[in-house]
Each structure stands twice: as structure tokens, then as C-alpha cells.
Length: 467
Image 1 (cartoon, rainbow, N blue to C red):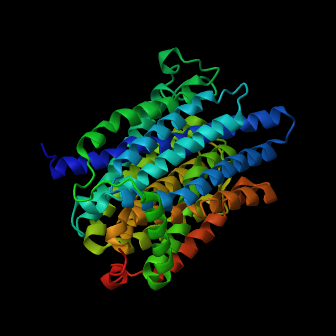
Image 2 (image 1 turned 120 degrees about the vertical axis):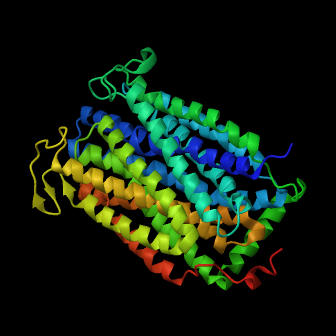
Image 3 (image 1 turned 135 degrees about the horizontal axis):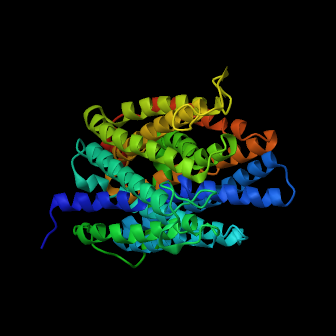
């Protein structure tokens, strides 16, 4: 019995729902800050000054993300090209889904009493790569889910649903698992299931929870989503064919300036956005003195903002096209980045503020950082949704998975740049606050390059000779 178009779209939506916790719980709001907190404590116990310990912990996290970014950048285009040559995407999604689950569960080994940093970060990188590679293949399915005018709305709705999944998982993790320094979760109870708060087992179990969440909610995807039947499966010679096709596409980039400029622009603004996501929680822990629970509440607000904005942005995308949506989002992210740098425990944009709580124990600086986070979440959700519909408009329709492999390459080829710039600036200045300033420059460069991108992509004639 054939699957209806509606079920296929909902199955495709469920990948965003299932995979989002890796970004929300592990990369940004719980495990990342927890890792920084534990590594900082170990450095301080070894006699290092507190500010330098925090800076070094942030740098280690940055270098780990640099390694994962380079791995994804080198492999993504080739994987996409091979998948287009085989005519199949689902087998790759199965393999990378397994890597996601294994890597996510690896957070369990981050024991605060001492853990193998190489093992923990290695598993984390495996899971992150699994998520990114699977995303290449699911994104490449987008053009098959609707017309050129409809896919903006489909992409926005999927991204919004993913954010709802992320915030749902985050709320559950904060309420029942992740503990603060007093061993209590957000609602003041011990971690669920007898997990040892002293050993931070609640926080460490968040990765296992993410793996189980992913496994459960990927079921509708694998039941309802199928590879196109008009693309016969191939095995023989696909590696060579994939390499040749990728080579042709790269050689043709100078003849397709709109695509080239879009890849360069998205490379920079997505790199900066990932830097904000990745270091936002670590920054709040180090600069504002927040706990993991505080960062989690911040994450809930940011993700809710992202879900609402992605849904509305998808409607705007379908009506006006993705380019205006991306432009407005970059401007909002520049404002947010400047605001984050200008917030300290005792001042906001240079204006002195009290360090006493004014609302629910939150200081004026805390509230300002919450607002900046909501803006990042809103603009970030919108720009990521619009970016993948823009890629559909720019790409060769016959080589869509390869195109999204290049898109992943663009997102990861310099993914080491934001973490590396933050790591180097933080180490050079010894200041976490100054360390995040390079993100502003990356957003500005991305904005400038977007000027040369055609809203509707290249003319069909550009792709006529590409077979």
C-alpha cells in the first residue's frame, strides 16, 4: 500500500523532531556547559587560576568541535555524490542514525571524578557526525515533498517541529535528570530512577535519553519515507561515478556564481550561528556564573522563540522567497551577538546595573542575556529553515544529495573557524567575553556575500550539460 503524501511529509518532519536533542541537550544547553564546568573544576583543583581554567575549558571544547567540523567537511560532499549515484538515501540514514545513538550515549562516561577526555569527546564527535551526515540525506529529500512554492512552508514547519521536539526533550531532562550543584533538578527533586546526583549521573544520562528519544521518534520516518522508485538502485562503480560527478560540480562553480556566493555566504553565517549555539551556554556559565539548570531555562526560552519564528519564517519564505528571510535573520543575529558581548554581571551596553536579583532571583544582566538568547533562537531557527530552501533553489535538481553534501561542506569547511577564532581569542585575551567577538565579523561577511546571490538560483541552462 502506497504511503500518502501527507504521511511522507510527517515522516520527514519526524527526523527534525528526533534529532534536535543532540543540538539542544548535548551541544548547547546541558552537556556542553557541564563539560566546561567539570573540566574547569579539574584545572582549578590542579592549581590553575579560575579565569584561565574557564578559558582553557572553553578552548578544549572549541578544538573538539573543530575536529568534528573538519571530519564532516571532508566527507559530506563525497557521501552525497555517491548517494546520488546509487539512487538511494535511506541506507545511509540508517547507518548514521546508529552513529548518532552510540555517540549520544557516550556522555555517560563523563564522570566528574575523572574521565577519559579523549574517549568522551571522541564519542561525542561520532554522534555529532552521525547527526550531520544523516541531515544531508534528509535535507536532499525536501524537493520531493512539494512544489517550489510549497517547500519553504514545509521546511519551516519541519524546523519548527524540530524545535518543539528539542524544547520538549530539554524540559524533560531539566525536570527529571540534570541536577545542579545541590543535586536537585529544576523542580527540586533528585534525578529520576535513583541516579546518583553526587556522581552527576542525572546530567550524564541526558545523552542516553537523547539516544532513546531518537530511536523512538525515527520510527515514523523509516515507516513512511521511501526512496524514489524512479531512481534504480546501483552498486557497481558508484564510488568512481560519485567522485566524477563531484569533480564536475566543483569545476562548474565558477560558471554558477549565484551558487558559489551562496555557499560562501552560508558557510560564514552558519559557522557564526553554530558558534553562538555552541558557546552560549559555556559563555553564560563562565561570564555570568550560571548553573547548568540556569542554562537549561535559557535554552527553553531560546528554543521556544526558535520554534515560533521558524514556523512564521516558513510562511514568509513561501510568500517572499528565502533570501529576504535570510537577510533579516542575519541582521537580527548581528544585534544579538553585539548584545551578548556587551552584557556583563555588572553592566549592560556599558550602563552599570545591580547584581541583585530583580525577577525570580534573576539580575538585570541575566534577563538581558535571556532576551538575547530568545533573539538568537528566533533568528537562528528562521535562517536555518530558509537556508535549506534557498539551497534547493540554487542546486542542480538532478544532483540534490550531492548539492546538500556541498551545503554541508560549506557549513563545515570553515566550521573550525568560529571555534578556533573563539579559542585563540579567548586564550590570547584570557577573557571569555572578548573571546566571542569574532562571530560578529563572520556574520557581517556572510551578509555582504549574500548580495550576489540570485533569489531564484541559476538559469536552467547552467545545469543542462551536467548529467
